[in-house]
Image (cartoon, rainbow, N blue to C red; front, side, top):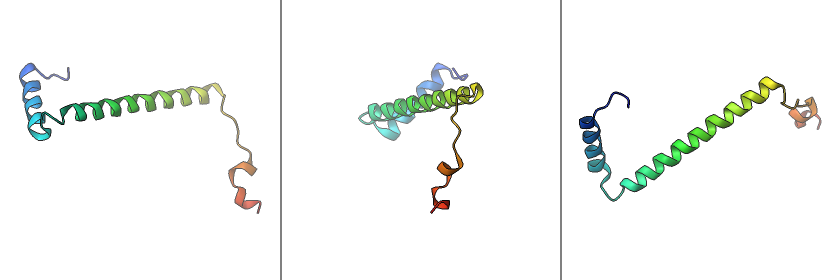
Amino acid sequence: MFGLGTQELLIILVLVMIIFGAGKLPQVGGALGKGLRNFKKGVNEAGEADEDIEEGQVEEISKNDEDPKKDA
């Protein structure tokens, strides 16, 4: 895992506990998990959009829909 051994992981864990405290550790972990989940969701949605573009399933926008201010 990223070339980190047991000793390095323990040192990182101790530093995190000193900085955030043991009480806030679950909140930090939860926020980190939500961030990763949202990142993965965004990457998957971007991949789906790319697939739609490659397959030609994107709807074309007419010029009237692009800039409604020009008509007024």
